[in-house]
Every structure is written in C-alpha cells, then in structure tokens.
Amino acid sequence: MSRLMTRLLLATDCSKEAVRAQEVAVFLAKACQAKLDILSVLEAPPGMDPEYQVNQLYLEQLHKEAGKVVDRVVHEAGESGVETKASILRGIPAQQINETAGGLKSDLVVMGTRGRTGLAHVLLGSTAEGVVRGAPCPVLTVRSVAKGTPPVGITRILVPVDFSDCSLEAMEYTIQAAREFAASVTILHVIEPASYGLDFTL
Image (cartoon, rainbow, N blue to C red; front, side, top):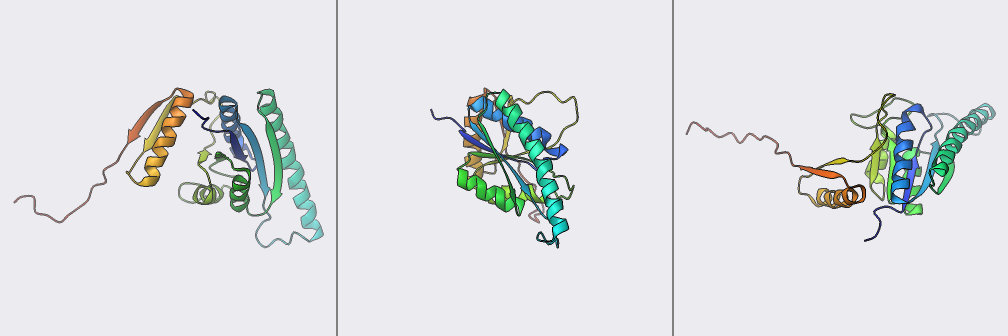
C-alpha cells in the first residue's frame, strides 16, 4: 500500500502561536518518512509602499527574524532525520501558500489557526481560512497550546460526516491515517433538529 503522505508543507508566520504547528509537521514528516517543505510568507501591512526606503528596511528586518525561526525549525527537523527545505516569500499569505502547495504537489499543508496579528474570523484566522478554502490538498490546522502539553501524537481521530461526497472522502482519508498511526476512529453524524409545523397532538 502506498504511503499516506510523501511531501508535507509547513506554512508558518514564525510566531509563538505557530510553534505547535511546527512540532506537528515534524512529527508527521518523521512518522511518514516524508519530505518537509517550510514556507514563511512576509506580508506588508495594508497601504504600505514596499518600495519606500524605510519600509524596505522594515521588510528586511522581518525577513531576518523569519529566517532565524525557519533555520531553527530546519535544524530540529534535520536532527529528527527529516529531509527539509525552506523558503521565505513576500505576498498575500493564503495565496502564496496555496500556490506553493500546488507547485510542490504537497500531500498536506500544516499551519496554525491564529497568526501573530490575532485577527480572526469566527473559527479560524483569516489566512488559515483562505488556505482551507483554496488549497489543492488536505489542510491540517493546529491551535497553539499551553506549556506542559503532552508531546505530539495521534491515537484517536474524530471524523464528522454528513454523507456528502467531500465528507465521505474525508472519512476515507481518516481511515488511511488511522492505519498509518494505529489510531482509533470515531465517526460522528449529527442530526440537526428541524421544525415541520405539525400538530403532534393529533
């Protein structure tokens, strides 16, 4: 049977909130003997002219800071025996991440749910939501956790299904992942209450 994943893409903004996502990506790459690509996208604040000299210095500083974090992740992944490549790009994060995942033919994108800005939609950060909606492959979003959290591991998987085609595909993917990690699977279907305006006293 072919491996579930052979190439993973870790998308990180190099913030403290992204540390857990980095740990998960390295764990999955090692467990699946997959290559790990690391991508950090630098985004200029709205309305900022990147050609202005002071702004160029600001972006260069961001690039240096991101480079330090990316180098650390590459080093840690290498110590775990994971083949790793890294790149830092400029642009709109969700767009660059999705294009990179497509170009690399990634099997999975791993990223945090919240970025350094703290800006968020109802459930996910705006970048994570954009990647989930437009990525050419499955996306694993990882929330940040408090210190002292147990090491990364996969022992139980919950897969909600509504019997649509996409949810059944998700279930098939889950079954493959469960075999890969010897994990248990719980399949959940939720029946949503509905009012039909009937008089049940009859």
